[in-house]
Image 1: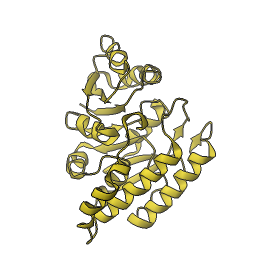
Image 2: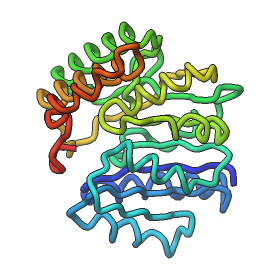
Image 3: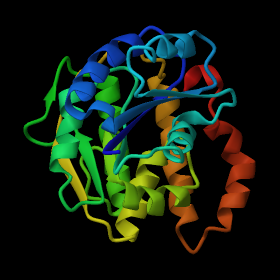
Length: 258
């Protein structure tokens, strides 16, 4: 099988139907039965599973995982990745912000890299409409911190579209221990440590209405998560145990805020 696309989903009943309506015919036309789209549903309380399963009769390439526990986006991606069969394994957000042609650009441009990621910050990226200014500011501050703490020369660590070779995925992803807000950063950091080349390309991206993120709370959560990750990969890793006891509950989001 050529391609596995993982779609983590938490309460996406209002948006995932449009996303599947765009992705499934696009990739079915190009790959036939040589691709799979795995929707990994995490702790949902709406009818996301029923909406996804309604597409399976027409598109047998659709697979559904439904985990009732609150394992977060990273946990949902990792669970689906353990079942993925493609030569290339990637993930994309359920809101449809990344159009299918932009995800296909990742496949077309991965070359000899182990990991390729979409960027909304590189010259040539098309972002319309622009995100609200609080989210833009929070995103840039987060990216600046990541560049300083982890020496990752990446312009947009949090864009929801990423693709790896199956070889790199099975080498890197099982090492990831933090599946909350630092999941993407951990993936990039582990990939660089393992000396797999990383490619970043400009993408097309739309800010889709319906996000459940609370910018102020999430910004604090993300900051704490990357601090924990930096400690985990330092000589002070022993501090993480104490850190979790003191701040672990702050990092953990209630289900309705993921």
